[in-house]
Length: 476
Image (tube, rainbow, N blue to C red; front, top):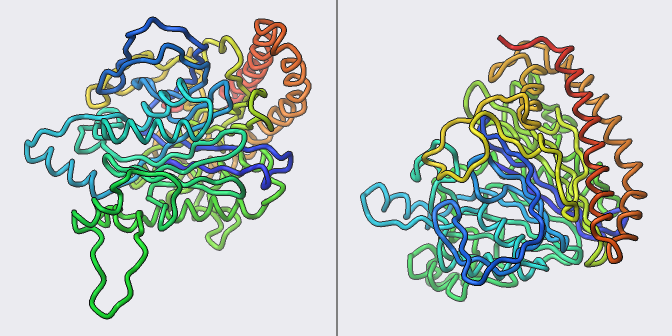
């Protein structure tokens, strides 16, 4: 379960596109941040994704990605052109058919994970439209079947994908069902997606046989005699009606509500506020006890003792895209549920990340098929795992929470991290301005300015984080 949302230029306070995502994963699914510089590769090179090998592009663009410890691809990321992408699991009739065929022993070829598609598009595309067309073509060619959940079989862990793909000028929502897809363009306003198809009767690009295939399969039938024909509805035709969607629809409507509250004045800090939401100011008044003992899935997700959530929010990002193509994008990122996290600004135009930020736990970072990988575990050398440890101590348990712990401890964590985020935000404009002045004449110095700033921010977060861990009692 994940959530992705975007505010276009007219909806933000500074006239910049702002993209955000919460990536929700199993509680052990460590998700380091990785930076890959632009590369020039030999002709004929190939790449090994999660399940299939593909020809590689001769040039891959510099990019940042939040990458599960076992995965080739990314849950969310941004490239040097200011293209930002995040995906969602969605459940469709073609997926259900593929799972049924696989269970019956029929040949079902693995395809590309949504995370693979994000990385491929970031490596190869300069605009969001290019990314839409590339992802759509790859989906038509290879499909999406295959487990995207560590330790889960293809039956348990496969899902289809929806994406928000943004650049400095526009954003697209792309939704894919099996080998077919539809994409809708947004040049203004706001939108968000969650774990359900949301494109209805209007889209800008898509598979040529989208409607015809649905009619052929009997998923969209002719109207009863004497009743007017309905306009073809992609979501209604392709959605798997046997998969409950109340938990996804609650979240997508909540993110849209919060976006609308600040339409025209949305800031990166408001996007972070959305990421930290547990329905606190609704009629629900948040969870009955606290967020660490959830009653329902919220945008900021916490593992449930009743096992109705997938796990925790594993990472969260807020990407601020430049006003014009060619400017310097900023990728604010934090591990873990963002209510216990601290966003730090990182840059695809940098040259290196602090080593801890890119480290996984004891299993290390590798590319292993999800159905074959073991569970990662704590390492004190991993930035992600230190935040996971903080989250557990704030609530007083790995899964179950101790009564009152989160309510007492989280405000103190938030106060310290808010102070750091405010400091980083105040320093950021001068850093970006200084780096921008060096972008053409001295790219190496530009990268050092950005690298040094991110490293200094991470060092301050780590000092605060370790102080909090010294203050909070360890969990036995």
